[in-house]
Image (tube, rainbow, N blue to C red; front, top):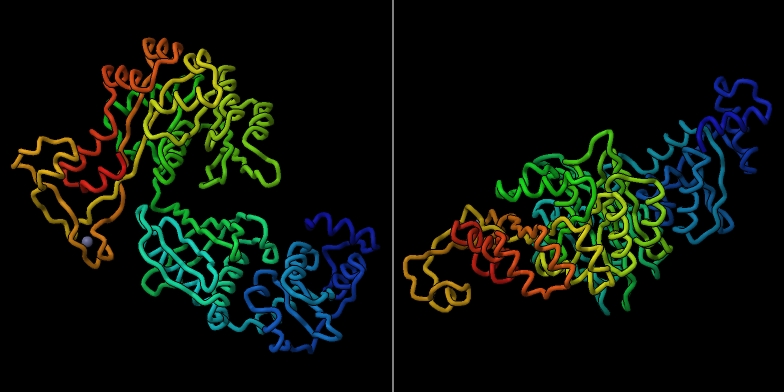
Length: 509
Ligand SMILES: [Zn+2]
């Protein structure tokens, strides 16, 4: 309830000037409105044994303090008595009926401080576990953290630079408590365990060396043994969304800018999960954004918040699909539409339609190379004529792990490896690099990742090939003749420059 609405209701109750109300007036008024009792709680002291039922973290999150427990009911007071959401959350979390008492907000705050103690001392062991997990994720720059229940315990794994690197396990009860706490921190419904949920949480690091904070996205998924949780680190500080900072070659940058500045048409970024497609698209949007341009995105989920851009989160569970969101957003007549991912025929057709009717449309697809995007759109029922007319270009990308600079060593590759990479096996003056493993890189030999790109440009000639539904192979050949540099070539360049290893080249290209 807004303060204006409250004032209005208080006036209805006969208070002539709600702003001049005493705390006694406020309590009486609010209690009357809510149909509950009021108390000033003057000489009241908290019952700390109630922490077993209502832990400090929940009390802080809901800004509520339990007063007494009698006849299997718990009386609680909220700092904001009109905070219905917190009251609902308490009802979900506590097994017993709740009776609300209205008390002066300053007094409830005071009691809440007494109840929880000074913040730093109120951490329970579960909070410690959660803190350590999040702290470690931030320190190692993990991209995500997976918590999976099995029959007897819980496993925790970190994904660092695209690879699962280590695992921990917890007993069933500790795992469950960690999951509940994470859900609470992400403002999810704790009682709901049978339906997938999605939320965000912000964590302030207590690391003594430096203070920092990080945002995580939390997704839950019901499984046979309970809820599985995935935390993705949304690090807004290390992820650069500046187009100028993406390592394109000058020629590729020029071609891309030409595509982005076209008044309408379709631009696609392809690659496997975690290859940085979304980051690239966000950088493009950031580059294009200005006051006179209306940008709308539909995403599942929204990974970064962009200033001045209307971002619509997709939620299939409640029937808000890409198709449906697209239909309604077209009514808002945006200049640029970004579709997080084109997964089905409806979305593909709508993306084509929108780009045909004067919009700039950008999207991502899961295909192994740039030309694959054309084949995929046609497979999804996209019309070849429309695709040929609207498609401006496709960018394929990968992220290759880079060698840790602190432990980088050179070596001579053997004939077998050279052959695998497509080099002449008799070459004997080549050397590659690898990381031998050190403290800086947690003994992995790698630190960070480097993107590589392959840009497919739709020229007049290519347009007619798309129109004729030319095969993948032939289309690729034509594109290379027109100057497309394939991902593998780019990867080999990074290999020869000593940026990455042959293993990475072979895994990703
Ligand atoms: Zn190292």
